[in-house]
Image 1 (cartoon, rainbow, N blue to C red):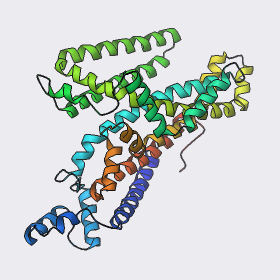
Image 2 (image 1 turned 30 degrees about the vertical axis):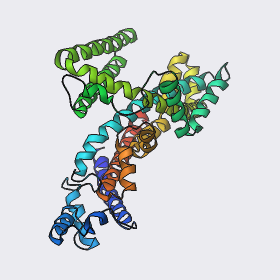
Image 3 (image 1 turned 90 degrees about the horizontal axis):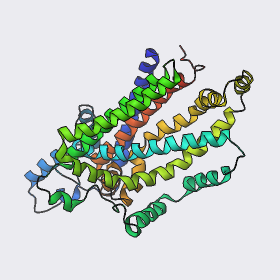
Length: 389
């Protein structure tokens, strides 16, 4: 296993270097240059212009710029943003990447859980009442034109019903008129850390509970842990960060509508994929054998059929998570959510090469990690898969 992981890691590093090289030269080949507005300004003296060019990494030949960029990149220096000068690219990504990850991770996992359970039950109860209605609903969400659907959701829930804000990251007036002001990123980071801690505890409880000898005791342990974790969450915020609670709730309030919208769209794909995979699995001989042994339907469905049907669904999930930044362009633009998707679109349109490469580099890293995770998960989910020597 370790040999396999090491080999794949080396392969991924080589692929990443090739990707980064191709991205650098393709972006450099674009016509025009954002830096023309600075370096061609006659009001700037030659000395200042040279200093500015050095600061932006534009001195020397294209090959020299490439070598310098690659050296800086692998030492953690992604350069300076042209469009948001003098901000460092790494600082911009560190600020906006968590917003994109939070939005899409919440929406993806919500859609995945609901879609997988729905698809599993639909396949198991094939031909029952309501199957066609639910399937058509899934097809609608899978094929709907997403920008139109997002605008419709905003019109219904933000303007017509007035339940949620139409967009943005927070309510500006509320933050400006508060007696004590907080950094929005600091509040948001604490929210993410809290959610991460809760997720780890709940997942650990789920694993431990399912391995208990008594099924009843396992379920009680799982639900007890969930309740205690939520209580501990409330107590912690009340005791440690009580003054931040209204601002954290404001950010969460703005997060609801884009999350629900994305979940609706994602739900259809997960449901249809799970249903198709489950129907294929139910035709296997080992399912017939499990039924012949007299095992309960729930055991056959969940432990035998659903586990193997989970393989292609899991692959789609993990690979999909790797492209959150790219997929976030439409969502973050429609909902004015200041994340990496909106940043990537703005950087590309303004020919901000360092920021564009930085965003693409994170997409590549996530994609390569996702492929490695999929290989490892396949070996865990399907005992028939083994690593070759």
